[in-house]
Amino acid sequence: MKLVTQAFCLAIFSLLFSPPVYTAEPGPTEQLQPIINGVIAILTDDALKGEANKIERRKKIMDVVSSGFDFREMSRRVLGSTWNTISAEDKDAFTVQMTKLLENVYIGKLETYSGEKVDFVAERVKGKRAQVTTIVDHEGAKLPIHYIMQQERETWMVYDINIEGVSLIKNYMEQFSSILRTEQYEGLVKVIEEKNKTFAEGK
Amino acid sequence: MNLRFQRYAGMKRFLLLFLISAFIPGAGGAADIDLSKAPGYKATKEDASEGGRYIPDLLTDDPFISDPVQLSGDPVFEDDFTFKKPPLRVSDPLEPLNRVFFTFNDKLYFWVLKPASNAYSAVLPADFRLIIGNFFNNLAAPIRFINNILQGEIEEAGVVLGRFLINSTMGVFGLGDVAYREFGLEPRDADFGQTLGRWGIGGGIYLCAPFLGPLNVRDSLGFIGDVYMHPVPYITDDATQDVIYLAEGRLNALSLSPPVYEELKRISLDPYVAARQAYYEYRNSIIESR
Image (cartoon, rainbow over all chains, first blue to last red; front, side, top):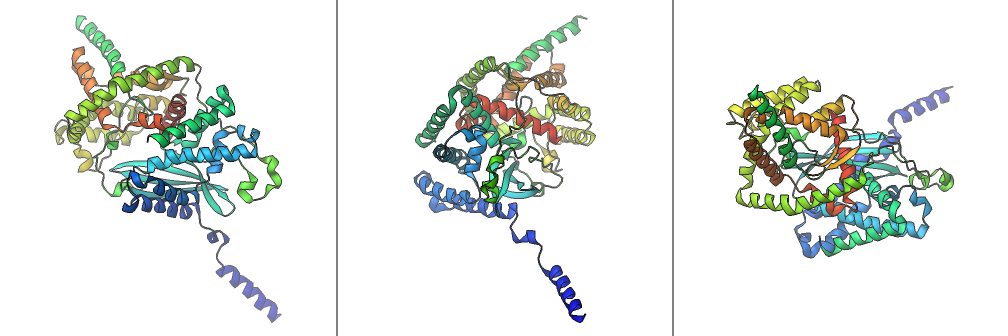
């Protein structure tokens, strides 16, 4: 009888003092914050500034960003139902081109960073999806940027960026479906490749 | 009688010229430029916090793509990997015509508005343009005041009124934004398109108007409503003065706003669709947040 009581007490104690399961995994904000801070650290590093260091800087930023941004998921979402109709090789090739496009767009935009403060102000989790809201303070103008994430195994990965209500992925999705209607998948890939070429040449 | 008719005719001319001079490229909406976004506009530290800030719920759309391999590493339910388009779609039956006007506005921007804005910026330093912007913004306060009332935002309307009174007196005819710097009263925006949206009126079909850029049926009506709430045509009966006033106001606003349109064009594969979608989502999010 005593043994049973002891066992019971032990069970109660272990329940009381064991940490809840969900704190074992870092939440969306905890996972996103170091990535954003890492990018800012690279952008403010004087040794990496300027046009001459562009390739090295972008490579470093992409290394950091890739750990928290799922470019394949973004590619899948922008393509919509067409994703299911293309071959595995095409999926890989498309992801490469799309990653390059998003790199040019998003990191190209980040490179205009000039010491703005980034505040993590809110987090909303629904099942396996989450929304992390940041406010970027540019000389008093406060720009809300929402990162939409999903939990893949243990990691929260960003698959969309929403700025002032405008979704990056939805915007490209609409553009792509318009191009797909007239020029099919092959035409779309060509358009994306050409866009990436103009980025590489000029800006 | 004659005087009334003259005023009416003046209003009509004014409306027409307002339409012509009011082109704002990109997704910024047609009615007003938020000067708090202009460079050099300083904010205090505490309003960087989210206190009471509206955070939209962006997870309401179904996770229209769910791939079990991605989520759990388990390929067993690969068949469940389905696509369902979110219902958020812009109605655009006039697309061919809209595209013509989009190209027209693009040329207008690069051939006329941008050179004009650059020349203007070269002559006047940014600080000075900011002061001019304050003046124009202050005079447009009745639009924001009436619309806040119509939307039932009495408190917001009070802020607009307070800002107008403080800036018109202590800010010397609205040249300085004392209400913000000294009293912490942030600018509150409101236009009639928002009001109509708030009243439950849908956007209607998408329109890309020459000179005006992205619009929909609701916001076009809202825009006309805003013109009638603007005090300047009621003060002057001379259409030429109205034109000069408005052209200067728009040019000033353009010279202060970031090059949204150029950025949109840079990152888009189909700028027309990009602008349409961005305008649609931006206006919806503003109306939802109110």
